[in-house]
Length: 344
Image 1 (cartoon, rainbow, N blue to C red):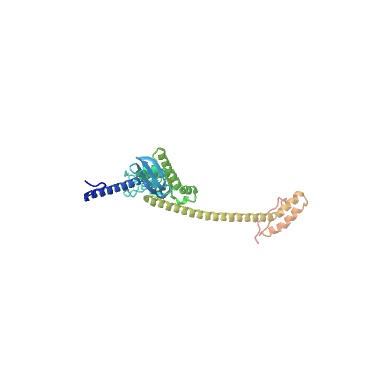
Image 2 (cartoon, rainbow, N blue to C red):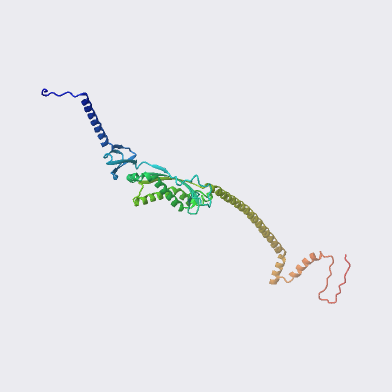
């Protein structure tokens, strides 16, 4: 029999089993603590956390310390914060590399890829880059797997809608000669980005209204507009033709103006010469008829009855001096005979 209070010494095997038990227990405790604190984490300043419990939405938390139940009770998903601006380049608007180089009337489905139809039946290529923020973390996390495809479709629909409401000149400078003539078109070109951003936001709001929102809002949109490669040469040819036509019209107007000015000068000179000749002839006629006018006035008033005889005697000598021969007859003598004489 053993003495009271005596404990038997364990053998090597028992001691090994005992140490193993305590080691496994310590590991279990550490694992339990790690599992219990697995969803205790720090949320970065530019991120948010979406907490779901068995798949159901619980809450969204911003930057700071997050304490949540461990998995599988609660899941924590990090999403970008509302202050972070994310970028997405829309590839659906780019031209397919396998598409034909020129636009044709064929049935190739890829022939029109990358082209957008304008309101005046023009064709333009648009490349867009969307910058957006996360406005609803849970909706963003829920749609994350399909977000890129949804953005492609939403932006493409907004681009088609915006382009269809505008003329080609309201999207890009297609006809430079109209830039100074139509300032309203220039203003609409400046508003293209804003109109496109509002159209995209309307599409996102429509999705949110039917509980299919993407959880994002538009920050801005960068748009680049270019002509189709196949249309550049045609537009250049048209512009050259219009410039040549304007130059020819300007030259024709210059020649016409010079001709008009020359004709006007000639007309003015002819009028001035005619007026001078008329004044001279009037003055000469007045000078030649001054004596007769005076004689007529005197006879009308019967001031001097012998004035006519004196005027006749004054004038007749000058007239007869110019004649080679003069024959005088008495008008009251009917028996007078005139014989031709010999010339002196």
